[in-house]
Length: 300
Image (cartoon, rainbow, N blue to C red; front, side, top):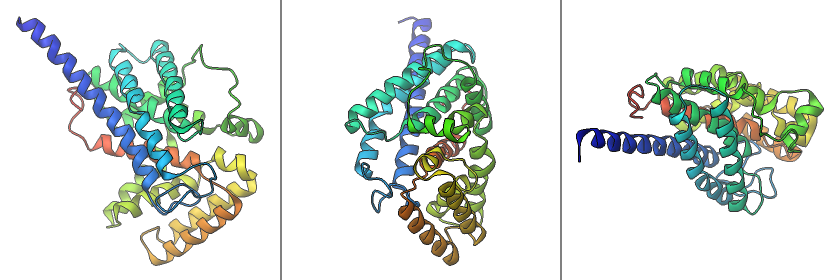
């Protein structure tokens, strides 16, 4: 085999390995978010939270079913010469395929629609940056993902009827779409700094991630909570999450007590911060990505 052909094969193998690495990071982020406990109102290792139709086993099965779709999204990013409409529409099509795979795996239950949107954009952006020889840091990936999200997708349904979309219309909030278009500001300015600060002061990884979730809950107009409980439930969640952080977070005795109270209140209201959970998965993905070897060579 000639050297040129060998280089082509090596490049193809390297690209495939990179795509699989990014897909694995995305699936792992969803799995780690699902397993994290105790999360107020959410499915975790203790049980189903405020949900009647979700279990941890179902969430984990859904996460594994999304692996091939995330790998396809990474390959779409690799093949894109730049961030543009072609990449946006390809990621959109793959996202709809991922949603179909999710529903097939869960028997029609929505487990990760928001996570598919968030992580699909981040995976595609990370792959595009790495293929272009640029540094794929948390900052550059979130910025590129935002640029992709701001582009129009001609093939996206004008109306989906999803609960999150209806909540956006009813309450005048931006939801997951607005977060993505802005480059995930709650992840970059709230969750990641809190995660890193919590680690630096000696909190366990679980406590640090719970604090990152609480940082998201304290300021996010979570459409999952709005759809279930309205503005009163949202205000309760935001104030309760801020109180836990003000008491020292999930790694302190006072913080854990307030976290239990928040969980009890969320369950009583049947409030589940699914939007914050999706952004926590995005936070875990970007945190893990930023700690991998240099991605500028394309060897993530």
